[in-house]
Length: 144
Image (cartoon, rainbow, N blue to C red; front, side, top):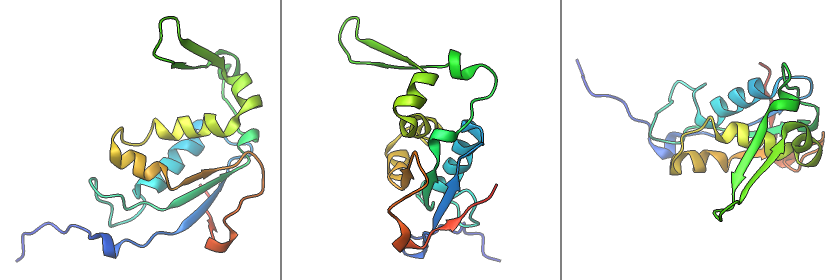
């Protein structure tokens, strides 16, 4: 009996393209499913230290839902690095100005916080509307 652990090789990874329609779904539910696909956790060859995930296209980010009163209470914060340089924006304003960024930040927080996570995030395409530029890749619709 062979007691060696199987490790996937980069040449064995086959990447697919998936479309997720975010219209009418909670932001966190869409983000967790996208992070799962980007990391490759839906595949039997999933390996923690190798990017085995697929490409993900998220459509209709402007129509995503926030549960409870998060739309008015959730704050997105970032700091410029200078004294007094903290910027805050409420989720309601973020969704009006840049709904793609809200989705991107939610997914980024669910991926590993290292170079592997950055590599996974490059396979993500987020669009506020219905149209996208990736028809040539023949993406499949992902239902969850």
